Image (cartoon, rainbow, N blue to C red):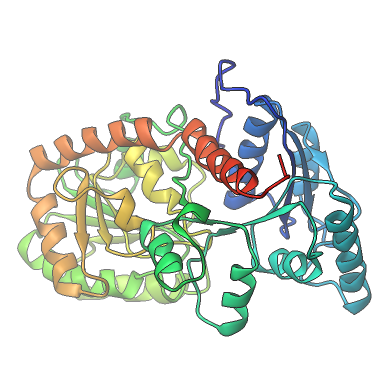
Length: 390
């Protein structure tokens, strides 16, 4: 869980904002966890904040938000599964929000609510529209049109922000790149990983790399196994742990049993104790961003003092500092991935030193306070640039 680490001395701005967050989720997953923490930080800073979520499907997000004291906007269904009648009802409620200026900021976190909010927007409304682009900048004329109708954009990688500006979708003043949040009190260095290693029959001194992600197409599992053949030839004592669940889990487990790996690949499924899992590794592998684009698993491993070998894509390009906290490989390059793993796994001092730097970076850069300040700066900028709004 991401803890609310924003201190009581956080800056209180002279004018409280009225903020409505829209998230068409119904389950308390990673993106929702981060959003709830941001909302609490905004409330602590003196803002009036409400949250609307998917109220059609049954999940735990509503109950979690309620327990945390977050105000819920219940006039919206906000579900991708809603039929045309409910969709029209949401459209009309949002239209009322725009026309009556009930909020200063409407902040959308997924494409469903962003489409509704942008299309229902009243031309003369003083309320400003913000969108977080967790899945990057996707192509399409309709998407580009909706983004141009948006006052502020939040990207999860520097390259995405640059693309938004270079394509003419937005101006440099209307986009920020946020760094997500990692709980450095929960994810810490430690020795508990020895328990997992022992259960897998991995020797204490064996160098271990690991990939922790959903096991599905596009997350790099096949590429990693192909690269591991080269790693195994050079470092026969090295081990690879693959953890996660997903539609490709059985397929990857079967390929990992190939006799050419000599039992050095361990596919262990989803693990509840993530800190222990990261502590069992010497090197964390991350080959593609997940659904929310923030690469939280990479940050969690960094907080546990593990260096990264990652593809040069998405937020990973910003997270990894080459030659200091890990290595970046050209996207899709099996050879570069193998060479990077061999280099790190064969050098215990390098793994330890870069792991220490990774921990420092996680503690300094990926905090709730930094995340809050970046979002706050965007809000203030787009509000102050509109005559008569503030």
